[in-house]
Figure (cartoon, rainbow, N blue to C red):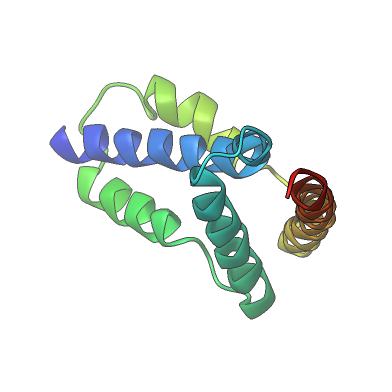
Length: 126
């Protein structure tokens, strides 16, 4: 039972991490230092996609699911049923990895634009 709860917790953390990667650019617009964490997360995701590796949270989830067995009367918990399919869509892995790389490139362009705009504004004020 505890392993299933831990697996669900890791799935929720994984889902929140994905949301952070998607919407973290807002922090850069607000000039938050968390934007550096966002860029690091994007670079990490790009590295994983290029190398063909999986996110470490995926390994933790899978390990905890194997430890949990099937002690419950339900085959999957509520969290696993709904979040799992959002995190791991039923698409070929090739498309997901290409999507990750395209996603990174779009954010790279956005951060480049933001950095250029910040430099221009900084020169005007300075």
